[in-house]
Image (cartoon, rainbow, N blue to C red; front, side, top):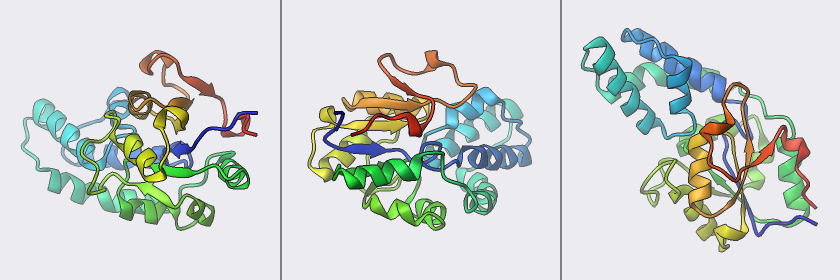
Length: 217
């Protein structure tokens, strides 16, 4: 019987299928300033906090387009696009059933996400089953010092649950998130998106083809 001390869930690309919306929003915002984001660069943004992403895109615009763009201007262009798209994001297959299974087994749960509190509220509104994950660490949490790939978000989530991260399972989809979870000492289960090479992830991952495949009992 497989039962961890806690399950620590990423949100974007793991519980909700939001990553295409994030990619579209960043692509359209960058294009407004003359930068075409490649798939390789979009991958570098995956799983990271919004401000960290904005700073990275700002650096690329300055280097490639010789244009000085502030993060505020970049986010002002990106946010309305993202909010419109993210409000429609569906659940990932098996996500609702997995959360409900943890409830049935009384396994503590926490959300460890790079998204801000407001962004999570927007995306979660059509998915009331996410309310079962009451303990949450957001990307703009005042106690969170560093975003993924640093381990802080998972360490803070485990601390708030009162569990040892080394006895917990973390669920991720992005290389940055997997790095963060591994650095925190968690057993890491990765729902690897199509097109992202396994070599970009740390060693020792537990690969999932679907959240429906997880043996939890």
